[in-house]
Length: 387
Image 1: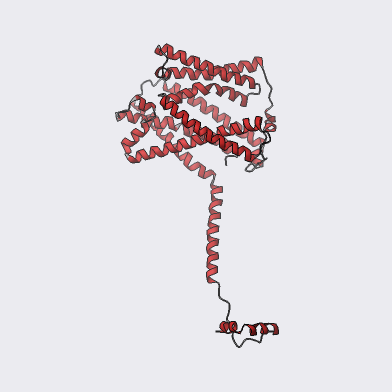
Image 2: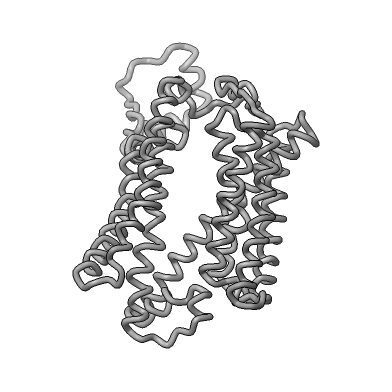
């Protein structure tokens, strides 16, 4: 399923839409519910992400706590596994196989990936403990991520979509954007709070300035470098020639999955809808919310209704759509299991109902000389069978 271009394109788009239910629907329901119920939640507890469990426990008791725990467990496990696989793949393929052992086999690369996963998991655990000991809560770290990694967004996008993009310029832009973002972030904290502390660095205005500087400065630097200093003319049709499989394993990729027309159609499909969704969520949505100012009761009712619809739509999509798209594979598995069970039962029935060999009587014809000789040697057996 994941190898099909149409499924991958729809999956990424629907995944982004469904993910938006977390900050939108959960913030509207559980976040505002904590304020409406006047729950005694401090700012530090809110920054640590304790609002949802507090509201769920207050409304549903132990059942609410259990549901939040299950949700967090699923989110953390899925996110952690994705990060581990991503890091291990980068190290195994882009570092180990590219520069250390170009002749590495699939088994060797798999071993390196597993080692990296273990080491990365240990590092992230220790790093999380260190962040907690420093007093940096979940909200602070979440906003700070944009300052650190935001400068790589536009250069990477340009490298995948713009034939004139420079690889050297992308590296320079990413690191330059990071430096400028950190400078702007620290200066913003100094200007707004008159001192640089964890609290002043974590304010929304300062974090926003750092994120915006990281994203836009790297984009401007990469454009200037690629346009005037090191322009390229990359032919994307040659991209497949530089992708070297470890063992030439194309299982799951049929002719349709490698058809260039199908791939171009999938690219156009996801590009148009991706641009439209980005425009709506980043530009149209905020602009339409500005005139509302302080929400009136009808506008707030509409906001709540939209968040509920978005949440239920996301839940239905991620629950039903995978089953629908995999119905053929699920049908084959269930059919095979049913056939195996039924065939086993039939074989057992036949084994139980198999009739015994007919008994021989004295009126039977005289056996052949050879058989008669054998029967004379085992007369006791013959008499027993006759009885």
